[in-house]
Amino acid sequence: MEESEHRREDLEEHAMVLDYLPIGRSSSARSEPIVQLLGENKFTLLEAVPKTAEMKVGESVYIGKGDRDKISLIKSRLNYTDLTEGAKKELPNAVQQIVKKNEQRFVDLFNNAGALNIRMHSLELLPNVGKKHLAAILDARDEKKFESFKDIADRVPLLQDPVKLIVERVVVELKGESRFYLLTRPPSQPHVH
Image (cartoon, rainbow, N blue to C red; front, side):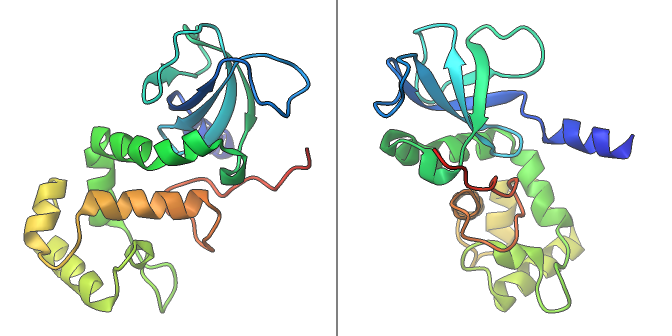
């Protein structure tokens, strides 16, 4: 029971359009439109077949189990290297939109994150967060839980923009450049085309 609940939590309900290819990939044998997507829950990279030609980069689409209005089927999960150049360029913008839209979820990360092991705290996975920044974050959250990104920025003055830190971390994880996955699902194993 517990594992199926965990799997359901990992499923993406909504995704942001990173790129729309009206005639598909040039390397593909079949000429069908495809869309590259970024899941809004676990930042899963996906390729799908759209139902409609009305797909805009940056729009949020429903990809859950129910009736989908714009997506016909999810073809596969992608790795960062499978993304088009356009999708790679759009990725940081899409991640930023998702982070800002789900502010409380990411503020809670700062409020609740714990140690990875005896030498490293999970917040140290965020870019440029070393021992001094970590101590400042932990001291501030011990006084009072953070309420917003602005609250984090105001109370931990030496810290960069919290949104930017999260966006940079998500992109690092999606590129598969990490041993630890704090915000995304670990990349799928590379597949042979």
